[in-house]
Length: 117
Image (cartoon, rainbow, N blue to C red):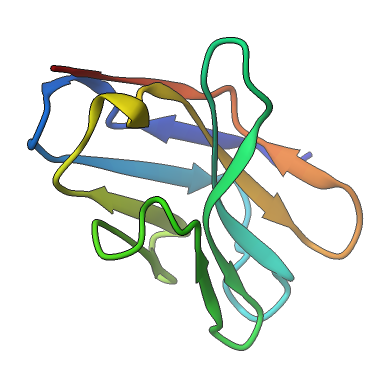
């Protein structure tokens, strides 16, 4: 059973920064992972992609976060992180870590990010 645990959420003022981390319960960075990354869901809205790393190293960002957010992974620690800079109130959401190993997507429980104006 794959488990993902997010950390690093919180309350920050607009213009500030947060760093989210996602720890996986299995060794997933040896090339088995098809995709891993971050999604978010704001109240009353659908879950949306924030940033993903696809097998081979291709990185995708939502247009709304390009230039402000950076996704990275640490193979030794089985973690994927999301550095979020210049945060805006519209970034407020629950952020979810996602992992796909070739079958169904695995999701973490989510971590709340709140950006005050």
